[in-house]
Amino acid sequence: MNEEIGFDSFGLHPDVLDGLAAMGFRKPSPVQEQAIPLILDGRDLIACAQTGTGKTAAFVLPLIDHLIDLDDRHLSALILTPTRELALQIDQQIEGLSYYSPISSIPIYGGGDGALWDQQHKALRQGADLVVATPGRLWSFMATGNFQFNRLRYLILDEADRMLDMGFLEDIMRIVARLPKERQTLMFSATMPDRIRQLANSILKDPAQVSIAVSRPADKIEQMVFQVMDERKLEVLLALLEEFPFRSALIFCSSKDKVKQLHQTLRKSGVVNEAFHSDLEQQAREELMRGFKAGRLPVLVGTDVLSRGIDVDNIDLVINYDVPPDPEDYVHRIGRTGRAERNGRSITMVNPMDLRRWKRIEELVGRVLPWTERPLCGWSGPPLHRQGRGPGGGKGGKRPFYKKSSK
Ligand code: ADP
Ligand code: MG
Image 1: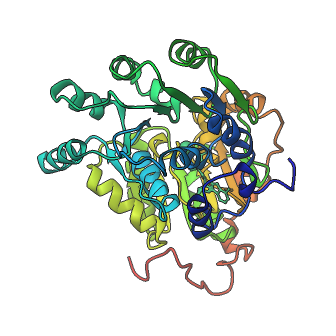
Image 2: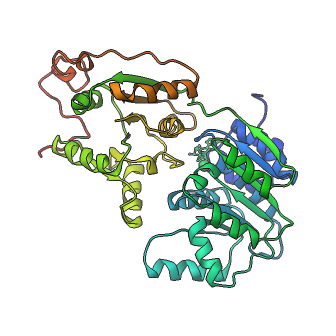
Image 3: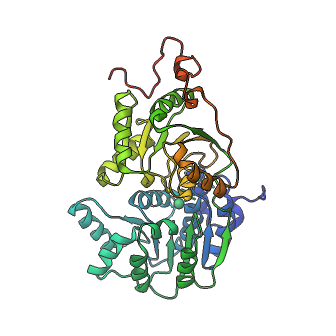
């Protein structure tokens, strides 16, 4: 990457540059460096880059730049994204980057009660420059109301692969059918399977392509992998939490039931943690996210609902309590750490039955990761924290911060 390129080289409006400075973005990330000039040029675009590489600002900055000097404000851009968490995050990033600009945006997402529906309905009626929406909820509004999308000029599909995984193809196609044909369309995805190319062929016009890397975890993530029998996992997990100091940790399990179970078990062991899965009400999810972001909640146990796109800085530890069935999910899960310029560590527990799955992950990430040896995992010997190896261990039991004082 060219070290010389700064945000000022794109010719962005001074108010946009001020927004960037306020957000603390000093240098464009590689995907921003490549995508921003193409978008400013008016090209349709398909961009593939792993999570955490700054795709949001790559499309938000040119949008703000385009819209900033419009005399006549109206709904100009629609951003479709798979989850309410992402809709809120993108909306917040727009708010930050357009702090010095007269740009407005509204998030539209599902869940919640009738009051939320009414509030979103009203917001849509009143209008904004940008709408950031999940496809299902937006279609519910479009199907029932006569919202004006006829002056829309920009359509962005964020996390397109995830939207298709979640079954949003039909909603997306219905929405697109109601949008003006004369528009600029941008598509962002962490992966580029065939069905994404097909979708791109059907809704983009002569798109430019930006591909930053095949899905590979960022180099800043130290990936560790342990061979552990299921019945020893909890013990190993507790020892590892003590061995590796962390501020915020995510622990992934492949099913809701496992998440709920591990959450309870950890709680009984004194680890302050909460469970994050699709059974939770939206309000509860947001509450957990706020606590986690603010550092009040040190450990979050979750399904892959957590693994895509959630943008929380300062996650320094990601633990895969089991091996994800889909190798791509591994990349998404560990991509929750090592965000932006930070370092992170991931730990994956592999039981003998998951060895085949693990091999597929190694193929995807393109390298063989050496097994980390620990006495515990060799299925013999006392736990690490009783040998005085970890920071919290061996010296008469200094209580780690993430543990309750009494249970
Ligand atoms: P992606 O959509 O590719 O997963 P995001 O757009 O959510 O990634 O960005 C990941 C993180 O990096 C966010 O916290 C964002 O604020 C930060 N970020 C993005 N671009 C920059 C930049 N140029 N400089 C510093 N931080 C950035
Ligand atoms: Mg994103």
